[in-house]
Image (cartoon, rainbow, N blue to C red; front, top):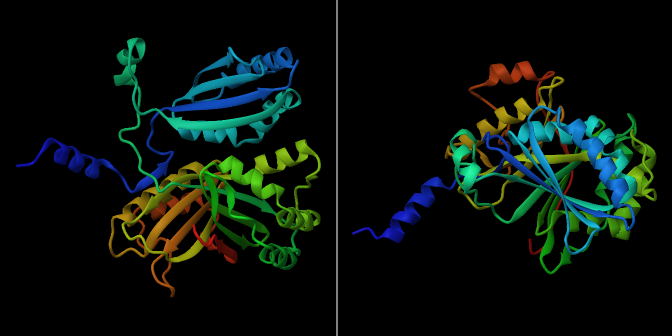
Length: 359
């Protein structure tokens, strides 16, 4: 006789998807921004927020927002906003328009931290009455404890060999960031003059990024490639560095893992999307890789899709060390995919792939 706990376990095993991360399920999004304001700059911050709030209200997909001030520390503020789904928020937050909108905040803000959540359940009062009309995440996602993020930037044409040499030859930083955070893996690829650096972290991504930026060996590499960058930056100028890394951020929008736990050969594919088609292109790739994760014959073991504006990169680990092709043979929506692309997907050249010994 099946017990209640066994039935619950069986139900959860059926519900839990191999997709541990995705922005494409259509559920509403809650964005939480933690802000540390300079002492004495609270009124300046409030005025800058009100100006920003009026502009954000007209952004497609925006539903509402709140501004809260700590009852314990007046320098600590909290901004929460709700969006119809993740894609319109990501399209806005990764845009040049957003970079311009938040500029007035920088002079009065010491630090910020952005957190994004799909809404899974709502309870009580008005929320309960609206729940049937509001799209919620259907089931919890089960991850592997790893946060995936990437950076991308371009270098001056003709400088690619020198840049690749610099990026390949550096001393790896200490993997341990703090008691709860470790660097797991850094994979660096190039295609033409575009560089993509994908990182995997256990723990706090922001703490890991700051840890890496402070390491002398990494700082030396960043300074060495500065003369070759198409977008100039001054790492000694906080605002210049902030703008560069904001534009370079290439967020992970989807991650799926097949049943097999072993490692494979890592590839990165670059998909040059036509203007305005990056998010839809990423969604089609996500659908393909979800199906591949269920197919025992597929060579794909893991796939992470990174997207910002019209830059789409698919990082895949494939079975075997030989010639398994991570492209999309027989892709059901290949015709639509082709319409979204300039040309075809291209395999990026591996510059370096480093794993921490105990990752």
